[in-house]
Image (cartoon, rainbow over all chains, first blue to last red; front, top):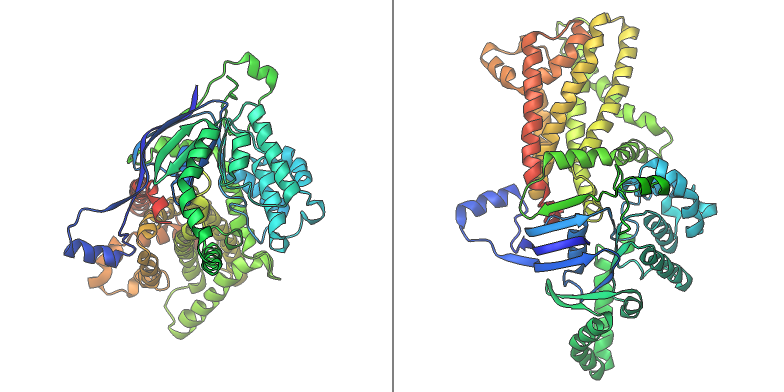
Length: 276
Length: 296
């Protein structure tokens, strides 16, 4: 049985976005252009079978997260149809909806509610969550006193304490120290073995190859490869190899500048864990 | 097939024995691109996420005041202060010929304040909760509903303060005050509808929020909140009569200040406005909600 089916799904945005009522009025009077569309996803059709562990890879901005959000029902497609069966738990970015003023404990319940779990359910899970996140002494402190790593541990513990038929994970394994990452991998493994369907977006190609039964490579909003993990990762690596070797060949000064630019971009990015 | 029987909440733990006895039913969810939200699905999702509604209201009411020494009292301090200002200005400087002017003014002002605060909070809430709405699957109207519910809680607290004032100054309290809950439901529904509509529009057009913010005081002076209708010249009365806010404010003032039941005309008009606002609000929201993602 398919737990997630996408039929000719496209997600598109207008290239020139109207941001104010004033602009909308002016534009409707002055121009009659047909809108130009930017496609986040373009005619994607795929089905994910129950029990599969699917990895999604691709460069930044390729539409990986959009694909995950559409599959989770967080965003509606512009065109096409999505069918999902059973319960779906999206874990998009860790710490989604964490409130700096609430204590760790209050945040557990709030976050659980955001993921669809009532208080009674969270009451049964709360001890496990605290133990897994190793935050016993700090759980009644407001979240603003936590370090980034502590927040990440708490967020992961809450996110993975829930049960669902399909778990969607977006880039969450990249945080935390080595031992925490091992624990994360163990939890994801547990989901797979328990028979849940897991869909993971990650840039960590090696762990995806180890974890997944199927890998989908997304590029430019379209499916480039869908199938065997090793083959998908090899094809993806081959596609990104030329620019990488060129960068290595050029002067070290230039690559240092590129690195600095990337660092600046990350710091500005809304998805930075400290910018929530 | 190892799919858990889908029950009311996605986290319900099924008893294995029970699960084995009942046939496994898997909920199928179909989303078609370009189709607006269905009311049935939104209501079903809202009922499923009622614990989130409770958490959102709880957060609304506590977080903002958590770090201040006065705590929850802050919620009431602001309206109290405004009340004192208006009272000073209008019962002593302008001297309307209205007995117990403070009750006259406050009974309507509390309803007005609920309306304007809820509307602004819900428009701001969408901006604050925008990142959230991109990451979790919750019915999107839940944020506006949460703003309305926390507004109603604040409204209840303000009313408690008002009753205290009424007893203190010896303003008569009629048994017809028992009608007040009905009034509050009507006011709540009206406010929810307006909030749904304007919040949706403000997601697409950022300047709408500023327009509404600027328009609110103007609308308040066009509604008989601080002055009695009798001082309005006849040639402007038609406007007051066509202003939905007049009825929304009157329906609260009637049982509290006049100690009467609202007239059938006031009652039916306010119900019509409330239901009309909710229907229009929902129609705007259902078209907007599927396109929020690109604009948040």
